[in-house]
Structure formats: C-alpha cells, structure tokens
Length: 583
Image 1 (cartoon, rainbow, N blue to C red):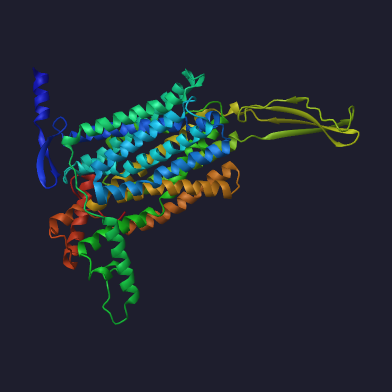
Image 2 (spheres, rainbow, N blue to C red):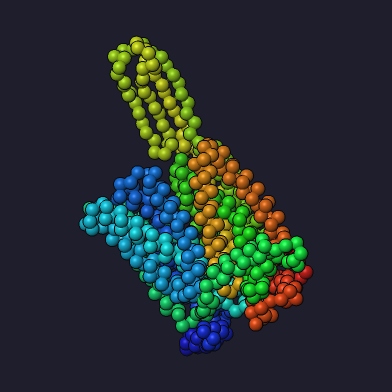
C-alpha cells in the first residue's frame, strides 16, 4: 500500500509548467524534487545514442583494414574525416532546430536519419550483399548519414534537456548537465567493451561478424528514438522563432555596411552592432551581442580538445609500448562527476571561493596541460632506445648475396633482438646487432596520473562549458551556441593533424609542445574571461516583453547580472554574498 501511495504521489507532483504553442499544462517531478520526469527520457536517450555511436566507432578502423582491405593510412584518414564531420554537422542541426522545426522535431527526424545510416552501414558489412565496391559505397553512405544524424542532434539534446527546467532551478539544471555527461560516458564504456567482443568472438559469414557489431548499435539507436518519443507528453517544447541565423547575418551585415559608410559627423555608437538599430529591434541586436561575446571566448578553446582527443591516438599508442593497454578516462568520468559535484565544489564554496564557470574552465585547461606533462615523462621512459654493435668480419659468401641470420619483429616495440649481415664492400661483411630496451619494464600504471589529470580537466572544462553555453544564450539561439561549442572540438582535431604532420618532432617533444601551447592559451583565455560579464537571457523576457531593448533597459539588465551569477554558481553551498562577476 505504501508503494502504491508513493507512486501516486510521484504522479501527482505537478510543478513543471510546460509551454507549447502558447498552451500551459502540467507534468510531474521526480520523487518530490525539482527535477522534471521528462529529463529521465532524455538521459536514457543520450545513453543509448552514445552506446550506438561509440560502439560503431570501436570497430570502425578494424572494419576498414580487415573487411574493406584498406591500408592503415587510408583507414586512419577516413576515420578522422568521419569524426570531424560529426562535429561540423551540429551547426546544421542547430539551424534546423532554432529556425524551422524546433528541438523536439529535429531530434526525432534526424534520429530517423541516424537509424537509417546504421542500417545501411550494417548491410554493407554483409559479405553476400554485392561486391567490394557495393560494400564501400554502402559503408560511406551509412557513415555520412550517421554523421548528419549524430551531429545534427548533438546541440539539440543537451539544450532541450536544459529547457525542461524552470528559471529558478538553476542548480538542478547544472546538475542535469553533469548527469547528462555521465550518461555519455556510461554508454561509451559499455559499447567499447561489448562491440569488439561481438566482432571477434562471434563468427558469421565465415569470419568476424562486423554485421552484428554494427547491427547492435543500430538497435540501440532505435531504442534511443523510442524512449525519446515516449516522453513526448511531458516535454516543455519551445517552438522555433523563424530563421534567426538569417536575421543575425543580415543585421550584422547592415551594421558593418552602415559603419563603413558613416562619416565623422555622425553620432558615435557604443557598439558597432548599434549601426543596425535603424532597421532591426534593439532586442535582437542585444541578443547578437550576447552570442558574439561567448563565441569570442570560444576562440582559444580548441587547444584543450587538441590535447584531450589524443587519448584515443597518441596515448593509446603509448600504452601499447608498455606491458598492457587500458581505457581509463570514461571510467574515471563516472567516478569524478559525482565527486566534484558533491565534494569538491561544495568544499570550495565553504571556503568562500567564487569559482565561476569560466574559472572552472581555466583550471580544467591547467589540469590538461599537467596531464601532458605527465605523459611526457612517461614517453621518455617508454621510448625505444637502440643499442647497435657493429662487427666487421671477412666475407665467406658471394658479395652479391644478402644473408639474414636472425630477425625477430616485436609487437609494437616490445623487447627486440635483431641480427643481420649485409655487404659494404666486396670481400667484407658487416654484422650488426641491434637491441632495444625492454618495454615491459615500464608498467601501464604510470599512465594513471595523466588519465586522472585529464579527466579532472574534462570535468571542470567540458561539463562546465556545456552548461555555460546553454545559460548564456538567448532562448532562440541556444542550439546555435551549443553547435558553436561543439565546433571547438572539430577545430581541436584539426590542430592535432597540423602539429602531428607538420612539426616532425619526437613524441615526447610533441607532448611537451602541446602542454606549453595549452598553458599559453589558458593565460589568453583567463585574460579574456576576466573582462566577460555574465548575463541572464531570461531577464530579457521579464524586462522587455515587447521584444525591444533601449539603452536604459540594457543598463538595468546588467545590474541584475551579478546577482544572477551569485545564485547560479553558489546558492546551493552558500548564502548570497558579495562576489565579483569577472571570470
């Protein structure tokens, strides 16, 4: 009976007001908290979608090499091209969501595209379906559809989850982004463990079962779509507000044009965008200013991702030169997120330290730089050193003959002994003995410090940045700003390609270079963040219901910003106290 009562109480907790097309309805909260029930559908959807994505990627390179018979260089190039496309397409998804369909419909429609891509990819892995050309075509078409699907919904899902919270529940919304991030890594951990097993341990069509390895992620994406649609009646859905990006571009273009044509006799403007106020409402101009301020802050951020994403490449190769390899980051995330939310941040709050979002991101950069400093020390010790002894002996065979006495090939720099003959001059043979240090002498545990540091940096940088992008964006541009945040990841990968291909440095020197670059970028970012003023986009609707903003209104809005940030960052730990709003 008590269980039935609890269930009834759960269903009758109607605190969340849902607005859709001007109508208001009610939805329950989770167990008497301020968390709407709708976010549970969103979190489960994200878990299944990430399982689908990372599960497919876990075997993608092996699929290229072993099934399509591509060489490693082509396989690597296509793999990174696909990864980059997945982080460039969020811009398209954001435009569709904010300008045309709204976040809810965009997620559904692009998820269908996502599922179709998985199905096409799975069919392309069935040997009996056509020849190698058909397999390549199906694989590429499938990957392109997956890239548009996963990239298109990326900025929408996180922003849509943030939309479910009431304006006053900022602390709950911040925690939601932490839970959301945990669901991403939970799906990643399980998929990267399960999918390779499905490929290697299950045999089908006379070999490794890539069709099953790609088919299971497809099923998970179907589940993600079904779960998301199941919560439809509980979501708060903000309708799109027209082609906002086109209006933004036109407004900026007009401002630049008018500024260029202005003379010294024209009245001065506070901001260059104010030159468009003769045609566009001041509210839109003010919203563009808000977005541009954040986008300018994003300029240094790709360097963090340039370091972070090397866990899947450089750090993995480093691990293979040790006595085992393991994937620690996703596991540590699941541990660190609750520790930071329930222990670290509250303790910092009790010390009366105003740790604003931008300060957290700067600290996260420092942790990432320290992680690469640690990786440098490890790399120096695992680098293969060759000891070469040269012996000259009389020739005992024909000068034109090459004799290979001994040749043992190591598995990725494991202990090696290499003996061979070759002729330098007629009648003389040079014997060389080459040995490297035993790689097994360096234990994989030495990588733990760098993983701990990079994960701590990820918690403080990535999760905070995700919430910051949402909180600082006007309602009609939240998906666009989320897409801008994701673009920093794409450009971070471009930086890795440029440095890795162009620098030509030893690996330990490359690690040290990345660490130094991030420290320099962190200093620049901290200076930029110091002059940033936090805003509360929700105040626009309260103060300016007529959708216009005049100069006095802008001044009044700024007076409310410091109190808003005080409540947002520290109200769960402290009573409101006097704090600075810089950084």
